[in-house]
Length: 456
Image (cartoon, rainbow, N blue to C red; front, side, top):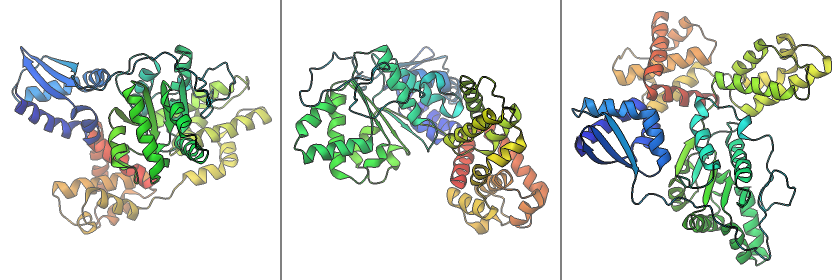
C-alpha cells in the first residue's frame, strides 16, 4: 500500500460516506506505513481513532482492498504534533478581588457564571442516532482527567440538546472531580463581564478570573460575532487556557466556519479539536424523549395516563423543536392531572390547537422545487424538462420525494407539476430516494438538509 493507494481510497470514501463524515473523520487521517496487512495512521486524538475504527473501519479496509492492497487491520496512533492533553490541575490560589467558586450540586454559593439546571444531566438525555456522537464526546470530556480533544465544539439548531449536554458535562465534572473549577456561562455573559471590567478598570481581575479555571464552558458563542473587542479578549483567553492544558467546551447554532462576523483566527482555533453537529431529531428519538418525560412526570403525578397513540401522534406532528414538544407534553400532563383521566386524541387536538397549527408549516411544491434547484445548482427548466442525465434526474427525484413527504399533494398532482409526468414516475422517484437513503449516506444527508431548510 502506498500514499497514492490511500489517496484513491480516500476519494472513494468521500463518495460513500458523505462530505461531512469525510471532512470530520477521514480527511484528518495521516497515512504512516503499511506492513504485512496492517495500515498505520496518525490521528490528532485517540477519540478520533476509536470512532473511525468503530464506525468506518470496515469501509476503509474495503476501499483500500478495492485499490489492490490487502489490508487486514488498521492501527491508529497519536501524531507527534497532536494537541496536548489537558491535565487536571491543582486548585489555583484565590483571586483576591474575584474569588472563583467551583460548581457543586450541593452548594448554593454564588457562581461567577450561569446557574446549572439540575434536570439537565446525562441520565435524562435521550440518545439516538442524530445525537449519538455529541453524547459520546460529551461523556468523554465529563470523565475528567486526560482528554483527547480541545476544544469540544457542539453545534445545532434550537432545542436539539446543546445546552443540556453542556450542563450535563458541568454536573458530571463537579461530582467526579469536586476540586476542579468549572465555569459555565453564555457568550453574552462573557461580553458583559468584559465590558464591566473595562468600565471599572478591572481587566487584570477579569483575566485572572477566566484564565485560572480548569474547565471553561461558553454557550452560544455566535453571540460575539461582529464584536471585535470581545472577540480579541476571547481569543487570548482561549489561547491562554489551551497553553495551560485546560479544557474548553463551546456551543453555537452553526459550525465555526459558518458564523458570519467571527474572526478567521477564532474560527481556526475553534476547529482545533472536535466539532460535532447535533442533527434534528428523528421520529424514534422524539418518541423516546416523550416516554422518558412521562416517566419523570409520574414522580409528581403517579396516576398519569397518556396513551402510546397520543405520544406517537405528538412525535409525528411536532418535529422541529424538542422544547416545543416537551411544552406540549407539559400541557397534557397538567390537563391529565386536573381532569383525572386518560388523555385522548380528541383532547389533544383541542388543548394543543395553537401548537399544532404552528407546527404545520405549509411547504409548497414550488418552494421544494426552488430549494432543490438551488441546492443542486440546476435550473428549474431542467427539473421539469424531459432530460434524463444523472445530474438532472437525481435532483428531480429528490424534489418529488420531498414533495410527497412534505405536502398533501397526490402522486398525480406532483407529476403534473414536474412537466406533466405520469404518477408512476413519481412513485418510482420516491422509492428510489428511499432506497438510496439506506445505501448512500450522502443522499441521506442531502434529503435531511433540504428538509431542514424547507421546514425552517
